[in-house]
Image (cartoon, rainbow, N blue to C red; front, side, top):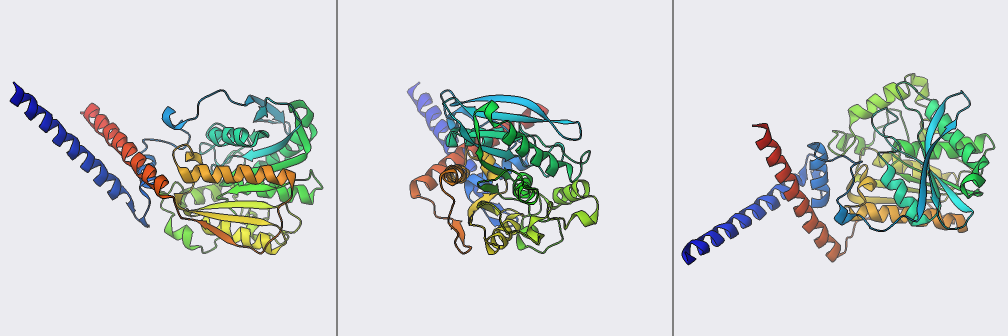
Length: 385
C-alpha cells in the first residue's frame, strides 16, 4: 500500500513538473512575436486577446482588483446636442465636498460602432476618478459609419460646453477643466482643445493623451509597418476602416480637427502629457505630435512605455506599466490644476527599466495566467469533441 501511495505521489509530482515546464515553454514561445520578442506578461495578454480568450473590457480577476467602497458616485445620463439628438455621458462625482476640478474623458475605439464606448473604457475612468478625486465625465460621442466626421468632434466639444455650463449640478469647478482620452479618444481630446481655442470656448487646463491617433494621412512611420498586423491590438485593416468610415472624403484627412499632427496652428494650446507604447502602430505619430506641439510653444511631457502594446492602460489591473501610466496621468492632471507645467524643450522619456522584484512578479503572474489560458483552451477543445 505504501509503495502504491509513493508511486502515485511521485507520478503526481512528475505530472506537475511536466505541466509547469509545458506552461513555461508555451509562455516563452508566445513571447516571440512577428515583430520581435516581447515581455512574458505582454505575451500572455496578446495571446489571450488574439485567441479571443479575453477582451480589453473584461473585468480583471478579483485578486487583481482593489476592495472597498468607491470614493465617488456614478451617474449615467444623456445630454442634448444642438442637432436635436442626445448622447450618453457618465459622471463620476467625489463624495467629499467640492467644488472639484473636472476631467472630461473620451474613450478609444477607432471612431467606429462596435469598437469602443463608455462601457468598454469604464475601468480607466473609474481609476481616474479614484486616483484624482476629481469629477470625471465619460463622453459617449456618436460613432461612424452612421455618424462620420465631424459628428464625433462636435459631440465632444459640446460635451465640454455642457460640463462648463452645468458644473454646479455635479459639484464641479468650471474654472478647472482638463481633457483626456486614449487612441481615437486621444485624438478627440486634443482636437477639443483646438476647438476651444478657435471658438473662444472654455479654458482647458491640460490634456492627457494615451497613444493618440494624430493623422489620417498616408505618412510613413516605422511603427505603422512594424506593428500593423493586428496582433498588437490594432491593425492596418481597422485603421483603414476607420478612415473610410469616419473620414470618407479625402479632403477630411488633412483637416486639423481630424489630423492634428498636420495642423498649421498649434499655438496657445494647454500643456500635454502624451503616453505612447513600444509595440503600437500609433507610437510614432503620437510622439511626432508631441514634438510639433512643443515646437509651437506648448509644454509637453512625452513618455514611451517599452514592452507594452496599444491599449495597455486598459489592462492596468494586471499590467504594472499600465498602472504606472495611469498613475502618471492622474498625478499630471491633478498637479496641472494647481500649477501649470513649465515649458521645456521636447524630450521623449523612455520607461524601460523594471525593478527586479516587479519583474519577478510579472514573470510569475505571466506563467499563472498562461496556465489558466492553456487550461481554458484544453477544456474548450474537450467540450467540442
